[in-house]
Image 1 (cartoon, rainbow, N blue to C red):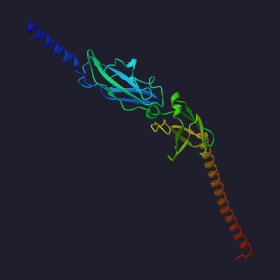
Image 2: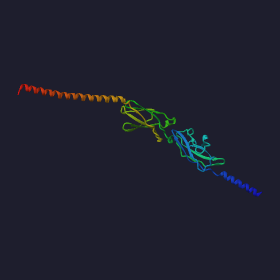
Image 3: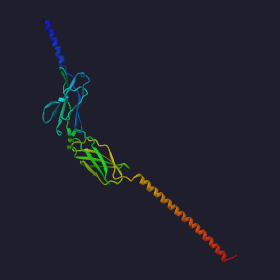
Image 4: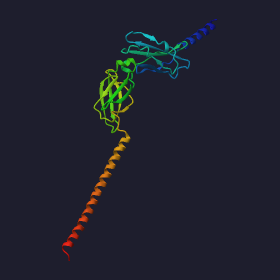
Length: 268
């Protein structure tokens, strides 16, 4: 009887030890953000069993409590968690944590760095269109996500002249339409735009958009001008040549006439 009790005690002890063994904690928990879309990522420990799942919690410094993200309560290895709808306060500060779990086993929590939505998001390139207006360019900028309006206070314009690569930069308040003045008429320029703000310098410039300030002269008109210039030059050469030839002929005739006159006046 005592032996049986000892065996059961040993089995219960082993079962208790098996249950209490913790799973390895996930690593590199981080929140990345692009145009105010916030994604949580993490790396499972290589020793984590394949059937383990992961749960995500977020903590706001204003509410001072942890809250489980229902959509990310049972992630598998390699999945990410979209926190965009959870981190609603653009000016708030947040922390996220991830825990591995399986039946009767859990890992310790791994916490991310402090995350500030407005300051930490990357401002993607705006959609830009350019058109000419004589000696200027009209720049049209399409609005980004609504949340970015808190950041789009300034924009930096990089203007490059296609002909020789000369370029300059302008900084001015954000507007959907702006005019770049004092450019050369009939010349092509390329413009790229990036956003700037006091609390965020993580911006990606737009692709260059190019346009002529005014329509360049048609190619056939250039050929016509060159043709007319060549014809005029040829005409001048012909006229001058004929004048020189006529002058030589006139001098020869005058010399012969003088010789005849001399002979008739002074016979030998």
